[in-house]
Image 1 (cartoon, rainbow, N blue to C red):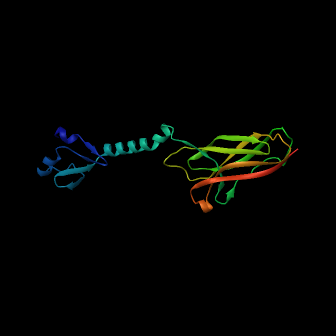
Image 2 (image 1 turned 90 degrees about the vertical axis):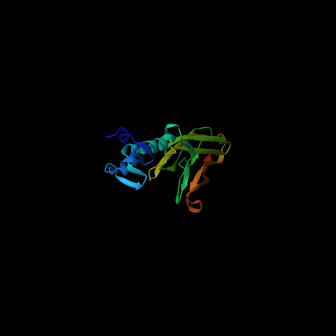
Image 3 (image 1 turned 30 degrees about the vertical axis):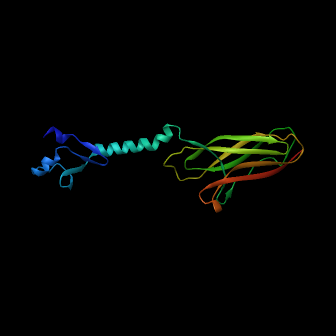
Length: 188
């Protein structure tokens, strides 16, 4: 067999074998799987398909390799489900207590990154953040990620715990919009 017929030049999913024009006209076209044009022979190339598959995998996983993940505010309202804030009804002034609440995740969002807490006289504002891997292909599941924050109030009276995050569903459809939840507690 002529050495040019063994060499394959990849062109996407199909490959062209140099020297095929002479083979076609000389009546020796039996090695080609498909003849699609009268002046050249095209055939499926396993190495060409392998190269395309490897290139596709490299490009799709490139975001993971280069750190394409994003930190995003936690979902506290997901369609008809709303997170609830768990905290004591009454606390002593200047004593620390724990606040817990879920955020909705799943798909490419699978991990808690941080929970930011800002304390003022009668208000504690908590902002949850989760990590979205940024992958092109994600699972279709729903996860509940529980955020915990330790805080305190320095002034006695009725105070508010506010969780600021995002909501999805209902009037927002599949897009995320800002949302907040509040819970009142008594500080003595």
